[in-house]
Amino acid sequence: MTLNQIVPPEAFRTGNLSSITTQLKNPFTGGTYTNNQIPVNPASAKVLDQLFVKQNQATGTAINRPNFVVNVPASYTVNGWDLRLDHNFSDKHKIFGRYTYKNVESAGTDGGANYNTLFGEYTSRTEVRNLAASYTWIITPSLINEFRGGYTTNDNGVSFPLAQTGSQITQQIGLTGLPKAPPLGGIPNFFFTDGSFIASNSTGRPRKLQNTTIQFNDNISWTKGRHSIKGGFDFQKLAFRDYLSFYAGDDFGEYQFTGQYTGNAFADFLLGLPSVTYYAANGPDTNPYAFHYAAYLQDDFRISQKLTLNYGLRYEVHPPFNDNTRQLTNFDRNFKGGRVVVQDEKGLSQVAPSFRIDIGSTPIILAKDAGLPVTLRNTDWNDFNPRFGFAYRPFGDNKTVVRGGVGVYTVTVLGSVLYSLAGVATSNAPVYANSVTNGQFRLTLPNVFPSGTSAGSGGIPDFRRANQTDLTDPYTYQWNLTVERELWWNTGLRLTYTGSKHATSFTARTSTRSGRTLLGMTQSKPRDHSRTSTRC
Image (cartoon, rainbow, N blue to C red; front, side, top):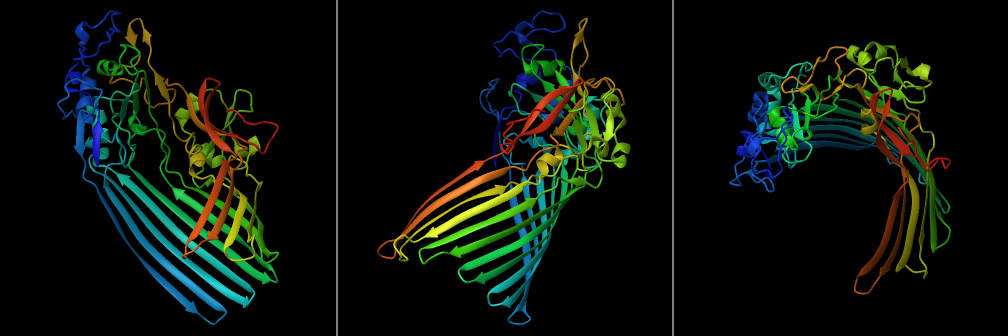
């Protein structure tokens, strides 16, 4: 993979920004810097040495084209095998079983154009194990039942060498007040909002994600006269174990430079003056799980030699995810001033002390006291999915057929919404805004977390994420129409029109409650015609 990136030019790294046509301001004196020569904060110099690769193209101080170009070796390997067993006990009883073992490994970059090559070789490994079995019972020639079951694990891990040195890097820079480093490590993220250069960390932290799916379903088919009737049910248990994460830098910090002090984001960085800093003191790994249910009934009705109709109804129930570690947290905006809602007593006992202090007088209550289930979201019981289709031979022969169909399909809500509730109260993610008082900056590298991670740290309280409690499952309308005609010389012609419409959507919106920033998941809900949207 070839990376074409713009990194700080050599002259910029020493404070020589004379190629910038805008006159840069001196925020300490109120004057300007002669010839845009910026003094370099020692901590900023260490950040450049540790986390920003040097240019390798002879582009001088130009920053309108790539000045770092490199070919990164990459590899992709798949190893796996399958074991299958089929056995017929008799003409009416048959079983099938299969075990799948598969490993997928890749190495190189994370696939992004801004991958920091100082991270070293980025490796990803996926391990899939699947056991599937079925039992078919031919009760009568016109009545057949099939029962299927499956157990699947899908474990994913990513890593890069530099992550293990994250704590050493923050110490060498001189950063203090950060949480204890997680076991898999990580890297601080220094970034420029004007997009001038790549960030020090656009990748995030190393990760180990474990997914487990257990599924059972039963389907019965019955042929009676001109009817072919099918029905069945499906059960799934979904579970996973994953770390908590709020930012790319997470426990190692995020450092944002906007140019609000000098007129240039990189110049602010050289002076060690971030506009905002933040970190995430994450709670323990989360272990959510959910049970999903579905049942259906359909009929193929052959009305005549020319026309066959297909109609049916599928009903699904997707209760929200629960969490074995009881780390889900929501926000009750219907209460005056707002209040924090945790799952139960175990969840309450895990609330981070610094989180309690940072939210001030906002009360923390149990789900039962807020009238919510332990999942902190209500289950949508309205997932009825009707379908209708037809096949029509207008000329009574087998040369022309017209087919069409329309249906409603529920879109399963999985990780995105669940992650927005996980670890909010067991973690702490304060935000620190820079300010100037009598010529003194509140935040100057390396001292950008004034009181560290202790309770009452002085950061802006940030609830970070919450969900609308009555979110409904999204759904889509899908339809199609096809005309097929057999032509001459063993030639066939097919014309198909397909369409779909997404009927509901989730939106992440930001609001403030009692001085706390809240990023929430809200939804437009066409099913409720009295209102088309809600706000966080």
